[in-house]
Amino acid sequence: VIEDDGVIRDALREILEMSGYAVDTAIHGADALEKVRTGEILPSLILLDLNMPVMPGKEFLEKLRVESEAHARIPVVLMSAVPDENITGVAGILRKPVGMKAILERVRSFQGPA
Amino acid sequence: VTLETMDSELKQAEIRLRQSQESLLFALESARMGTWDIDLETGKVSCSDSMLDLWGLSREGFKGERPELQSKVHPEDLENMCAAVDGAIRSRSVYDLEYRILPKPGVERWVNSRGRCTYDPGSDRPSRLSGVVFDVTRQKTEALERARLHDLSECAVKARDNLISISAHELLTPVSGSKLQMEILKLKLDQGVDLSRKELVRIATQTDENLDRLSMLINDMLDLSRINLGKFTIKPQRVNLSEVIEEAVERSRLLVEFAGCVPKIAIVPGIEAEVDQYRIGQVVSNLISNACRYAYGKPILIELSAPENGSARISVSDQGMGIRQEDHARIFERFERAATLDENAGLGLGLFIVKQIVDAHLGSVRVESELGRGARFMVDLPVRQQRGSG
Image 1 (cartoon, rainbow over the protein chains, first blue to last red):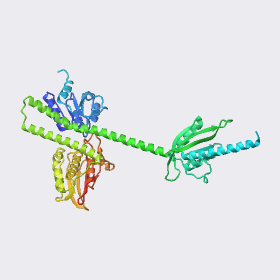
Image 2: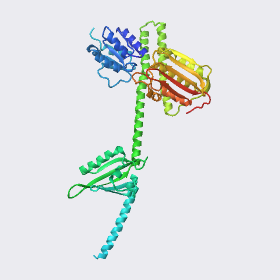
Image 3: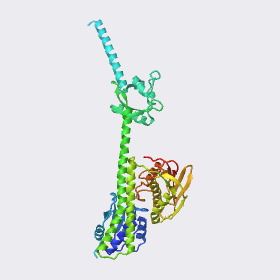
Image 4: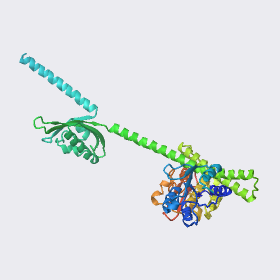
């Protein structure tokens, strides 16, 4: 979960953890890139906010795509109030304000066979 | 037919010709139109008085040379004009173009010039070039003004659309957070989960903050609309300015702490001034929230110094990213910010509103800053006579 707003970030973590997912959070793109690079596991899904300080979502996405082939394959779902029409190659877009149900439905759709 | 009758008819024809020439000249003059003719063999030019008039030349001084006319054409348009004339000669067509002439120092005129070439029947060589020119300065000026107004209104529409999009984003962030939080709370209540006091306090505090954020954004938008409609007014009262500023700093304390900033306060007590205390409080909190946004985790200094030359100075200094010299004036305009949209949230109205409030108090606001070296915003407020402004 990459989101600069603390309330939204904590709420997303709580919702996902309540549903049994392991969640890692980052406060902006640069923070997330650092975590993805040094992390031991690759996330199965990234929820990405667009408007963030330091490194906005769009820039993070570009950097992630060229990081490695494995990184480039991570599905990314955008979360934004005003979706940017110019962003392609994402697995989906969640429009803010996004509800718990919509988030869980979207996240579940990426779950591989258990 | 006798010679006599022929002679009389000739005289009649001459009179009619002169009459028609006179009425033609009158028509040319009235239409601010001139005629000209160039003998391409000799290079000699003959033109109507109205043409010379347009070109700012006198009949006596005019030697009938082509360069005399060309020297008055605007240097930026000369090449274009020559190309059009040459093209028309080659293609045996009529040229029609507009260009500027400089008849007298400080006078610029737009003319519409149409001309065509005639060719020698024997050799088929271009022999004469003739045409008409109209003064179209007024039409052109009006057209340029219309284009300017059109651009201006297009800019305004874009700015408004931009504001709507930015506002939507800014408003939806706190809404999203609180919405998710409430959904979680509801779910836990439904499931009969015992909520700790600590958790409830956290939820209440965050909801309260999100609502404050929403109110601030909405107030900024309302202020913008008041400013745009010319309905922005202040209500000055004799108050203790030092206390007004202290209170504003106090109200911003949470925000400052959230940004990991350390507030340092140096307020000279007991300064009296006739100001709108709500608006001056807004100036201080806007400057502080600006500092927090750009100077994450660093100290912020808020000062009020004793009046000098009838003005008290409020200043807010940060140690953030700083502002380039060339941006110092721009940041006080609406929808402007020192950094790009993606990097720093907000409506881009904070400093614009600060300036409007300070202007209404007949004060002044400016920034001292260099890129990478923090910024110091200084507001000078007259503390004696004050008048509200609309």
